Image (cartoon, rainbow, N blue to C red; front, side, top):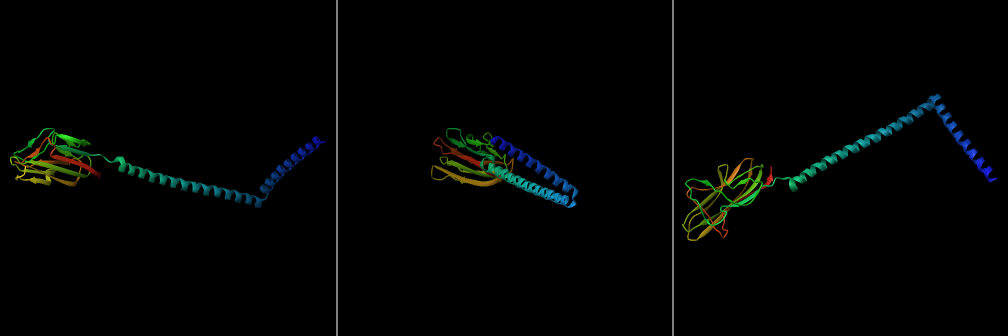
Length: 226
């Protein structure tokens, strides 16, 4: 009895599905033969296409926004690189004598001092063979120089920081009753690539260093590139 009931239910379901498919086909046939029904279908299709186009436009706007944000992020990363590690590194510091003590000078003419004891030379812009710093990066630089004077003779010491042959700052000391004197000066200047900076000892003057690390020094570094 239960088996007969199941079979009857299955047959009813099949008949219902067949009837629904036939009704759907009848509706499509009706639409094709009925201009009003066909117009409704076309309007519906147009609305669906419009919705798809609108969604596509929104996706395009979102894509352009993402591209703009990506470009902004890339620019910020490049700026951060320059701040953190992208900027060229230039710095040096040197003293006159590699060891021992004694005077340097006097000379008959103004003479660039050759600082032979190099403490640091990042960027290799300072040449100990000539005493000249040559800029390889356009930028703003800080330079400082010191001088030691041995008054035993008694001599006079006059040195000038010089850029491309032009004196920028000077340290002067004249013999007096004390034994030793020291002095210093400093500047912040802009340099172009190839500019030369050095410390020049005036004619008939001298400077002094000794083994107790009373030094005559020349130092400088790049503040920032331009």
